[in-house]
Amino acid sequence: MDLDGKKILVTGAAGFIGSNLVSKLLTYDCKIIGLDNFSTGRREYIENFLKNQRFNLIEGDIRNFNLLQKKFTNIDIIFHEAALSSVIRSLEDPLSSHEVNVTGTLNLLLIAKELNVERFVFASSSSVYGETKTLPKQEDMPLSPFSPYGVSKLAAEKYVYSFYKIYGVNTVSLRYFNVYGPNQVASPYSGVISIFISRILQNQSPIIFGDGTQTRDFTFVKDVVEANLLAATKDTAIGRVFNIATGKRISIIELAQLILKLCNKSRIKIQFQPPRAGDILHSLADITLAKKFLNYFPQFDLQQGLKETIDWFQSKRTG
Image (cartoon, rainbow, N blue to C red):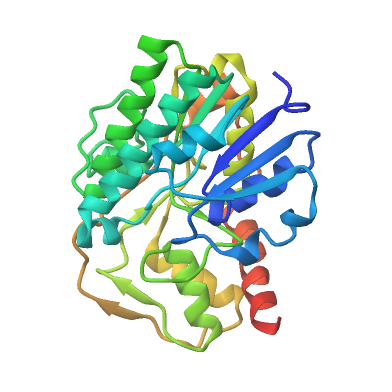
């Protein structure tokens, strides 16, 4: 399937991944509708898009089914990126995580079914695996999420698969592993890389929760965007779930040291605090299925991605 000539809905269009996705989609000859309620999305990320006649912004909430039904017609592809995507936030407010991540997804699936969309691409999460002793994590292994966020993503993923099996909606679920990159703001709810970079550039110590030996498989946002495009266009993707990652991991202490070096701030000392509830110890993806069925091959190693992310943070500071 070709993206040119399609009418595409991107939920969470003003968010971190959504805005990067819209930016890439605008290089194709397609019409894009961006939906965002701006609870976490930022208007500055879509300001340039608004100047493009092929982009239309709708301010609204995926929990409002009547709004979705009223606003959307003749949609060909849905990229569902909108979510409350923080484990910590879900511990503080599990009800909101459920309403946005589960009910919101179900609302969009009903719209997808009603409009007979050609493809529904869902942003799932590695959080659905929970703490598993077996690494790397494979799509067919038992799932045991323990944070409300992970549970909400798994419930939504099950709804996505249900709509494929029962109603014939062409769905694909992508389990993102620790995405980072430009447009990821530093906040208590964001990824560790953006928090580390923000603090280090302000000459503050990066803070590690735990002893720093925990490991993660970090994925650059441009690789995630490419995975979404492949999921939307490859027929071999339909009905499947894929890990989207690099298949490589690094410890959090090594990550902090690398960012300090890339920022030329190696003299800054790392601080340690007690482990946080809900955090897993180790994460590493097996991306064999994504390679086989999506032809997904990550193009950015961690150092490349970090350099581009640091450059973005520095440009925001000088700007």
